[in-house]
Image 1 (tube, rainbow, N blue to C red):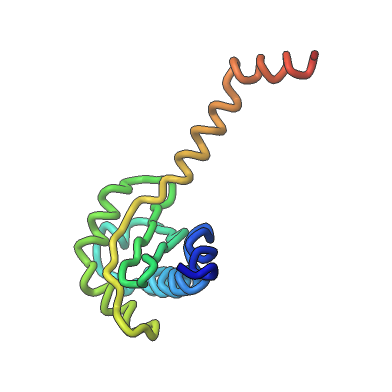
Image 2 (cartoon, rainbow, N blue to C red):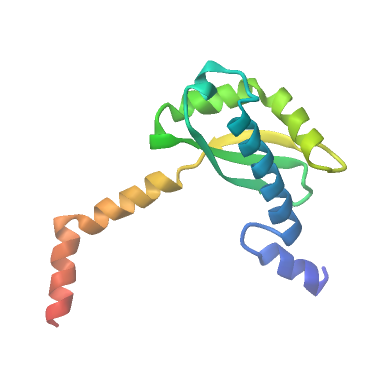
Length: 137
C-alpha cells in the first residue's frame, strides 16, 4: 500500500474526490427538492434539508442524509425517498457527470438529535453543580 493511499483513507469523510462527488450529489438532490421535482405528498408536505451525502470509496454508493424541519415524520420522509429511489438515481446521473450512477440510500440525519441531547445534559442540575464545584477549586 502506498503512503499516499494510506493518508487518503485517514481523511475524515473520505478522499477529496469522495467529498467533492458527495457535495455534487447533495446539491443535485437539494435542487430537485427546491424545484419540486419529486412528486410525493410526504416529501411535498415537509421542508427537507440534505445536510450531507457520503460516498463510498469507489463512488458507487451514495448515502444521502435527510432531515425534515423539526425532525417531524423522519421515518415517513425516508420511506418516501426510498419509493422514488429509481427516479432520483436517474436524475442524479443526468445532473452530474459520473462514469456510473451511484446506488443511493437514504438515512435520517441524527446529528441534530445528538446535539440536543448533549445540550440538555450540559444544562442538567448535576452537570451545573459539578461545573460550579470546579470553579471553587
